[in-house]
Length: 497
Ligand code: SF4
Image (cartoon, rainbow, N blue to C red; front, side, top):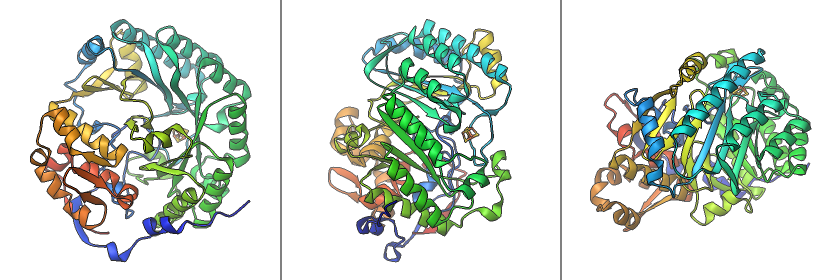
């Protein structure tokens, strides 16, 4: 296989640069969960030098740790019904399938490891009941611009049950030719027949959990899946006409080495997936029980982890992948890269998206909906979730109604996360504010990031630099997070950049 040479321009971005180091104070590491349904490792933090690791990922604002139990099923029902008042807002649907047949030791997801398929069958009944309840309450446009099955392992389900679920969905919602319909795939759980069922059911995108091809790493995380298996699933997907494939990689896993992960990234590049997510593994065994099965001696040092991350960035850059933001890359011809170039990038619970802001209906245990100006999250436990649905009550556990200030700050943070800049005039016209006055403290708080070369403050624009986009995008966004900045119990510490 051809060796990809590191790209010098990006070396400059990634290599720790002593000339940029300065002593800066920031809030202590953030340990909230701002997605509830996102990929593994994406909701926690660790101690590597990237400032980004210390701020939320902002798949929502306010982040999920700000949701309150005073928001219940009646509130969620009210927002579902109110959709008719804003019929132009498109719709997105998320379905959470929590089952897996084996435990990956790095896992931080809300999942259930079981060989007892009857549990999944009961869960599907509950999902369809929840869907019916939502269906009876929801008003407004029923066209789905986005559909995503996440988990857990959605492909844990048998083909017949996946088909049944999709029938229940398409009886109530309509898929469109421009829609993005994706499923998270564990390559060990699909064959051509199951993939054909998915394609026939309307899925047009695949997201494969790859993590690392190195056999030592795979043994250490209890997830053995040869590169040939992933290649075969990818080939089958392409033959069946899936339009786009994403690979999830994770850096910072036990027994990872520079050379080993470089081989993985080169093998991935040779397969040419349309999109790549390069997640940071957060080792928090005190919080996630599965991670206690990892031998601490096998963990890479923070320095090695950072070097692995930088090398992977270099390899992807050199191979022609466009950097999208956070930990995401895409081929230049992919819709995500195009959306990034043309300022049409959006962000939701599934990460970056080409689709405009949708109302998101989420079903299943722990899933989070976003309807109008509210977020609501379902009960996390499978039994609690099932019991509530069986009583014909929406399984909402908590949520939040956004204030005008929340809505404004959400838009500002999303502009940073997606476009890497804030055009002050847009917010002044849209929200009738004087931007510099309204965000006087926040602009002052950005000063250390300006001095570090991550942000430029211009007369009518706050611009994140190329360096800042790689290293401090979340940290820039977090300066506009009222809850994080006001958190009285937070500690402060000094970091050498
Ligand atoms: S497949 Fe592995 S990482 Fe994914 S949810 Fe299941 S146990 Fe966790």
